Image (cartoon, rainbow, N blue to C red; front, side, top):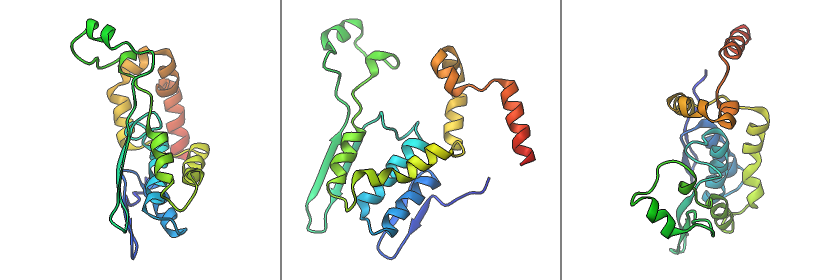
Length: 184
């Protein structure tokens, strides 16, 4: 595996992300004439594909954006509780917030945050998706941190039929894939 840079800089910009593909997407946005918001959106949307365990469509977004004239935009796109959620019923079940299960789920806010931020960018929001769509369509190597997280949670993933189908590779399939990879 060839290590690619996680950060880059130009004469009037800099970007750093936890994955090279997101950094590349941000660099492309800058090089195409976009501003910092365009680069951040391109990076965030790409991270949703290549680093989904840390930055995903189903998550939340918080941002502070300072403009050249000194105004600051604060975006709180954190997920709200579903409309049918019953706070009293949740309190009766436990005084503590549950760590797993449906009671932990909120309405994702990331996409609405992206849309709000795109209003201050130079490009349409759809332009932020180009790199992410290409990577999702063509595939990209699983990030080391994501592989580690999948391994760490392998038992829970294996116990859920839907998650098992997506995340757990049959040992024979793995051997075949590794053998084919070593030949290429």
